[in-house]
Each structure stands twice: as C-alpha cells, then as structure tokens.
Image (cartoon, rainbow, N blue to C red; front, top):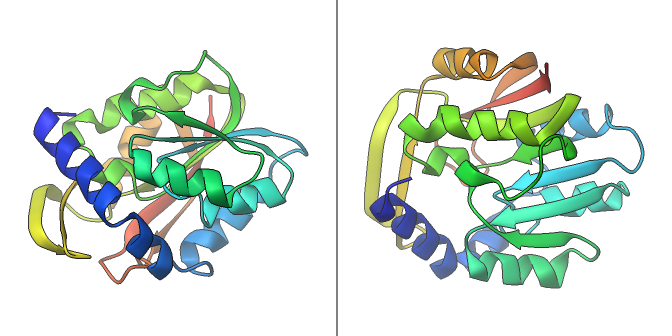
Amino acid sequence: MRDEPRGIVRRGYDDVAESYLADRTRDGGDVVMLRGLLSRLAPGSRVLDAGCGAGVPVMELLTEAEHRVVGLDFSSRQLSLAHSRVAGADLVHGDLSALPFPHQHFDAVVSFYAIIHVPRRDHPAILRECHRVLRPGGLALLCLGANDLPEDHDPTSWLGTAMYWSHYDDATNLELLRGAHLDVITDRLVPDPMGHSGHLFALAIRR
C-alpha cells in the first residue's frame, strides 16, 4: 500500500474512531454472514480479525462464541477502543499485506471493510497472505468490492474526515480468490451498514 493511501486511511480511522463505533450497526447482512461462519467453526477455533477496528461487532461475537481471537489493525486509536470493549482478545498493530503470523496459524480469517481501503493492485497479495496464515481447510470470510473502483480519495464526506477506497468488481474478486487458492463456498452482496454502496462478502475455504 502506498504511503499516501496508507496515511489517509490510518488518520481517517483514528479521527473518526468514536463516531464510527457509535454508528456501527450490530444486526446487518454482514453479521448474518459472520453467523454463517460461526456455524462452521469448531469450538475454540483460532480466528484472525484482519482490520478489526474497535472490535464491535465482529471480534465481540467471535469472543462470545468462545473462539480464540486475534485482532489486527494499523489504527492505534481503533486498537485502543477494541482493548476496552473486547475482553480476552489479543490485539496486534500490523498491516494486511504483511500479516505478522506464522504459516497455517489460524482456523479462520475474517476481514470486514478493510481490504477495500487498500489500493486494489495489492489485493492479490493480501489474499495470498490470508491463504498463508490459514491451515488447510481453514475458512476466510472477506469483505471485498462489488463494483469497479480504481481509486477514490474523498477529502471530506466520510464522517467528516478524508478516506480512500479502491477495489475490483464482484466477478473479478471471485476470480482473485480462486487465484489465491481460496475456494468460494458462498458469496453475497451486502448493503453497507454505514449507508454507502454494497460490498461483496465471500466465504471461502483454503485449499
């Protein structure tokens, strides 16, 4: 991820951490997809939330289901909020494109509303990282783009702060998953809980 997009996203999520948390819904289609993943996980699974934000609702639900959860984010303010809201979760400051974990370390990886903030040329590398840290047969539930957006830097409108987005359309993303040896079990277009356009959520299994 280039320094400028990275800086925009980090500063943006630091700036709006409390506002985003206050507006974040706990019962949308994205949570329905998460519950579908939960139904497939063995008790006590080790799960990575990549781009965990404040930990609500994703890490919160994973922890309530008694899984061993690691949350990763590069926004220090978001990690601080997660620390105060999700008891028992390990929190790591890090980047999606270079996950600081060993090979085959997790039973599942989830990533909600994070990959879409990375320049899309880097998305294949992120998907390969998800594959690398998953055990064979592990599951990935990933939020990806639903339409073609090479780059969007909006300086003011996202909760009053600058933000950056970049992603491929849904068909291209499904091909990228297969190219990363993540076989799609189910996919669904889900409305954005913050009122933006919808996103592709894909549940995939690692070959």
